Amino acid sequence: MATPNLIVLYVMDPPASVEFYRKLLGKEPTATFPTFSSFEMQDGFVLGLWAREKVQPQPIGDGSRAEVAFMVKGEEAVRARYEEWRAMGLPIAQELTRMDFGPTFVALDPDGHRLRVCLYDE
Image: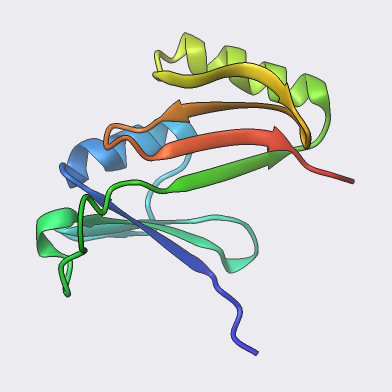
């Protein structure tokens, strides 16, 4: 069975996106090239950033919309991340709210990718 371990976001300005995720994640990229960079996360999971104009084959349509979820433990952790990201100046697409799966909010990266924070069901 194949287990996904990489998500790639197509970005307009790779250096700007690397800087954004460097600050957001509090870590340095593990691979950096002119058109692609990546950040290793937990358990071998990797977040990749690829220059949109260099992607092959080219995406159909916009190709910039994706949602990366950051699951945290405890409602207070959701609220704390919300306050932290607002203080960092991230655009908030969905204010902190309660949905059927618990408290959540959505911020945006420089390319409009959704960054959702939600509750990790223990």
